[in-house]
Length: 333
Image 1: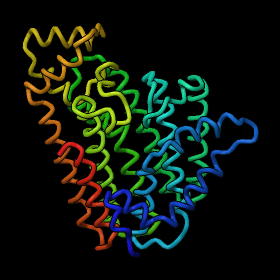
Image 2: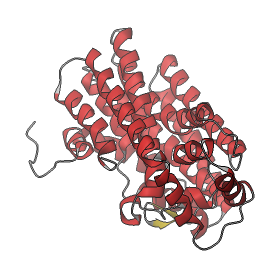
Image 3: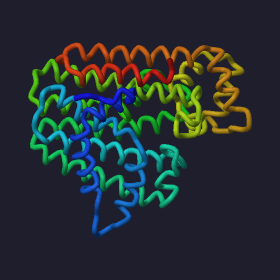
């Protein structure tokens, strides 16, 4: 397939290569998010799904299936299921975090209400399980259902760890693996499973998705302090205002002196934040080089994702997935 040379971003090249598959997935998404009984369901769902997201997770399912030589159609249902799981978690997350902006637009809970967001999220989870069953593989059902449970565990762990200055990097990694990497790794793994490739290739796909998801989340956490609003699609400093213990903060708190410890206890532990506190927080992170060390950690996980692909057959899609691992960290390079 010839690709437009103007299309340079790896996810765009991947979307172009998988254009016919993605058209089937989008049609399936539109069909399954409909509800004759409750018109608010497609209204709320469409607000988020049609907000211009990259559809990265379903693309990973389609890509892994095609990379492994799959010629059937079950990957369409699985990709749609992955997107529904992701959208459901976003709806729930925005309620929990009391967010007001997502992908540069007002959140669904702001435009409608918390009840609608929670219930529509539940509806999408149910739809995702219907789609999983249609794929006809108990192993696939197990992978995606386990990922759904792990995502919730990660969110609850993050909730309980929030504002706790004793949160460790190990706990942070459990949160990241739960809330983000679990769906990335499941999305790539199921493509190999339905293609019935050797176990070492299925493990490689899982490892790629896991590393890519961890890298993706660490980059987001880095950019919340170092990024620009236009690049993020959300307000820089949201994690600070929500008192989330992300990697740059955890590392700074671990080496804080008494004065800095008192600052962190006030703004994160007690939530007493005022003008200039975000700027002071960034100054402390920069002084202790925890933003730079977080960037280095993201680059390491990007390299792990690329290395995992060595077990998979040579293919243009493999090259795009390798480039994608580099692209994720390009924002911090």
